[in-house]
Length: 322
Ligand code: SAM
Ligand code: DTB
Ligand code: SF4
Image (cartoon, rainbow, N blue to C red; front, side, top):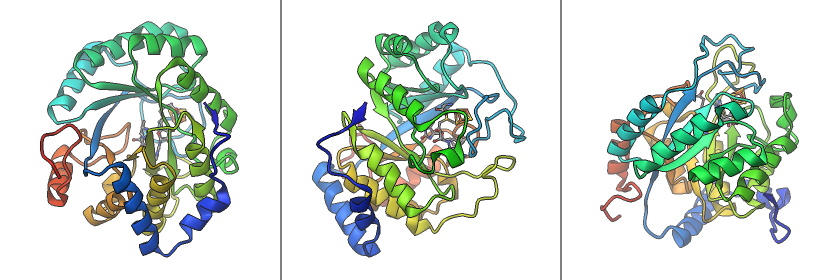
């Protein structure tokens, strides 16, 4: 994964998008959205935490970092039976992708066989598979690709400039190296970031520029709203103007017109109306199906289904036509 020499995205160009009047920005984002997704649909991914807590990293937002006192108790890697059970529930609830996350700095070679088994189990149910396990070596990426892993999630989290205010135990370029290994192995990249950590609008623009300039073009982009957790350094970060979150989604849609842009963390604090605005701005994927993400809360599948029904947006792969 490298920067795209053909891409024209610059921070200045992204800032022009951000600084438009809100209605103009939404109109532009919705126009781009409809060109690339003529039928409304929502991609639904279910997320499961397969290895809770005890992480040695210092990501200032993260309740699973061992060094912060957040009440999260470290657990061992989940069994294949437990993961299968959760994946079956996810499939029944209408998800098409099953994402598994581990609170690891990096994948250890000794855990590769167990991870490969999990990928195969999820694939055998006919679900797309996604893993997020921290940094990978080339050989580990090849092993996951061989097992049939469809996506690997590894977020850049924020702009290159703001990154070291949030994480000191690994660098922005470490993140890019793993993304490049993932991409070279043939696994599709899922990469995004977090909004609301005290970053400037220029930082949001800078993050989206890095994402939009990646080659090959990324097709899976989670935009998280910081879920502030007591005990983490960002635990009392004041909330941002919700309309600024919508703006970030809209600019992501315009800069990455073909990607599924996913709402993930922080959705439990968003009203139906705010989420509807995010969908209008171009969000067309959700972390859905379990009332918890990794450690924080997520809306129930019933609540999400009711919202999608109210808005007339069918789940991707369902028979209903918008
Ligand atoms: N340990 C692996 C890693 O960091 O790459 C995988 C799991 S990690 C928890 C996955 C992503 O979740 C992070 O990169 C970050 O973008 C997001 N995340 C974690 N805690 C969050 C929070 N409190 N609010 C919003 N997003 C969060
Ligand atoms: C992503 O971008 N968001 C998900 C997934 N990738 C792994 C994680 C959100 C975590 C929110 C905080 C928590 O629940 O601990
Ligand atoms: Fe560890 Fe990932 Fe949390 Fe960072 S975001 S502390 S790497 S689990």
